[in-house]
Every structure is written in structure tokens, then in C-alpha cells.
Image (cartoon, rainbow, N blue to C red; front, side, top):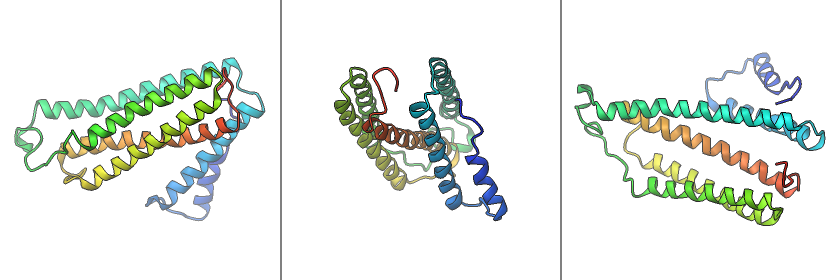
Length: 215
């Protein structure tokens, strides 16, 4: 990333500090996060599209950054999966020496979880197809399949919300609830963030800011 002295985050925090705004709730944090992210992405788009700062060296650096990001995400999810399988394969006395713990009613895997898995597979296929169309120069087919990907992402988020609403346990219900909500919640937040990123890219694609080689 070659952005210069970008002050959006510092400016937002300074405004909160001057006005003695507390971050004890999300009502201030989320709007400020959205505001800061929007302006940050806007600056990146200006540098990449209109100022021509994203040279081949910068693009290779961005690729490396993304690879490192994926590795960090892998390690994060690996730690929670480790906790889940450790508790499942070696259940302690405190949870009744069984898995899932006594008194917890698990969600039916053949309903919402299976549906969401199908949505994830379909969305990965559609966004890959959209990228293929973009590389071949067919921008409008790329847009159509991209819109389909966004629709699948919204359906996934809706199903995730309903799954949480119907669940008979919470994150405070022992190690099972903690692992379940941390894993699915982290993944859900990644899907929401990815959907926002896809929406930005869709707007840029419709404005013809992408080429077959630079996108």
C-alpha cells in the first residue's frame, strides 16, 4: 500500500477524544468504522485508477500482503478449531464427559448449515466465473455473475442471522457455545466484510475502471 499520510483514522479518534465520546457501545464505533473505511477505500481507488500509482511492483506487494493476510486468518481459525476438536475428542468432567455437553440441543446440519455451505460453494463458483469473464473482456457478463455472487452473499448473511435467532444456546453456554459462535461469528463477519468489498468492486466494474489485466 503506497498511501501517504492518511489521517482518516486519526481524525476520527481525535474528534471522539475532543468531544469525550465513549466507545462503551457500538452506536459510535460502527458508524466511525464505516466512515473511515469508506474514505480509506476512496483514497486507494484514486491512487490506483486516476493517479496511476499502482505499478507492477506495488501490485506484487499487495499480492504478498493478501497472502500474509490469508495465512494469519488460517492461524486464527485453526486455533478455534483446535479448541473445538480438543473439547470434543477429550471431553472433561465439567461438561459431562460427552460431546455435545449435556443439555445442549445442536442445530440440524441438514438444514441451515447445509444450505449455507451450498451458498458458499455457489458464490465461490460465480465470483470465479465473473473473474474469468473479466479477464476475457466480457464486462457485462462479468457484472451479471458478480451481481449473482452478491445475492448469494446476502442470502448467506440472512440465513446466519436466522440460525442465531433460532439457536437454543448462546456463547456463554460453555466451550461448545463459545467455539460455535466464535467460529461462525468470525466467518460471518468475514462474509459481511467481503460483501462490502464485492459491492465496491461492482461499482468500479460498472464504471469501467477495471481492465483485463489490471483489476
